Image (cartoon, rainbow, N blue to C red):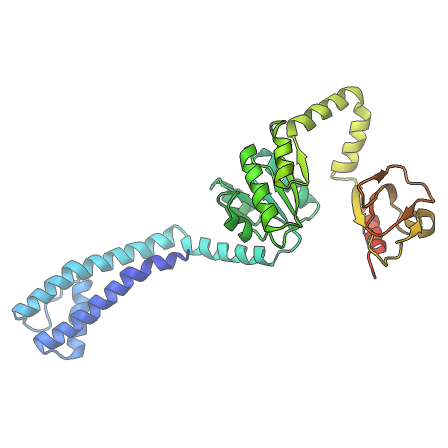
Length: 333
């Protein structure tokens, strides 16, 4: 809410008192308008000047009412105005309006529900790939941290439909429910799926029995941080070099290499052709790791004669430039 709206009622009361007092002096004392206004001003300002003219009984009663009601209202109004300025509420309101405008214009972004330890890492990874994100979190202290990073955010209940709407869920591409509470993640998934049936939802599950509930609620993928951490630690113990290699590819800040997935559109340059005829490797320089068919089956080691068809998902590894070249080949020109 605009903080200046807090001043509407006291200002209206003060204006009514001033108009009424001016009219009262003019009617009860027979003063001209300028003298009546002057009397009201010196009374409200409590400067201590003497009356413009001698007052009769009615005028004295009117002056007492102006002092009791008007001065109190004026002091309260001034106090509210100073509080708004000192606490920076106007600046905060303008910042919030600007952020709301940014969120309303976002398309194909990712909504992160919950900004705990997992949410922090999710945001870090997405921002590193320059993906637009909006964070919804219930902790007020999160606002300052997100403002410093220029990350659009909404402070409030992550399960609220209103907050999801404000985060632009109908225009979003992905939602990640990574709150510490499994219950909250289930509710977020239910609400998000109802608001946007096409949304891709990734949800966190702390307990094993929550996985099935999240899938039933509409999650496309369910991840357990404890399960993943356990499996990764086991791999580090048995295949440390392989893990280091994957880390170098996926998380190195100096190596411009990554894994991308691209959907083959009907009528694109490579649709209906084999990998050999499409010459993806020759034109882009990237390596094709696998091809996922529309039915969900993977071709994990695609050969040269593997045909890339409409709606296939090509998984490739290469530099951002190389992956961008494949994306252009997979789209309709």
